[in-house]
Length: 127
Image (cartoon, rainbow, N blue to C red; front, side, top):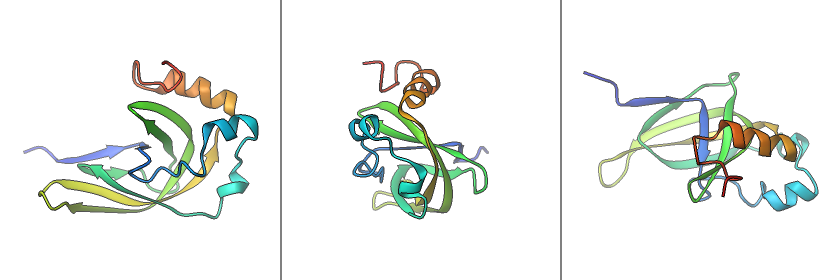
């Protein structure tokens, strides 16, 4: 019998799942880049990732991606601080947890990385 647990090296979140879009705003980042100093002591929460998932644990980096209507915008790296796997009210496994940002990509690198590392056709910059 196979395992129902996914192992991920990418934390890809919608705003509803906990991507902090109020902190990581692309237009602001392009004008005045966000730095690690802006977020280094913050712990962020994510929730409602479908399926049972395990992410690489600190000190291994996990890519940090904002999923915007199915398009991927890479922001940098995070360290996972906690993982919780539970069932929702419909009996589906869901994953949540906490993370801290450990690297923020400069705007030019962010665009290049997003173009090259997103699944085919899923880069935020390929619209």
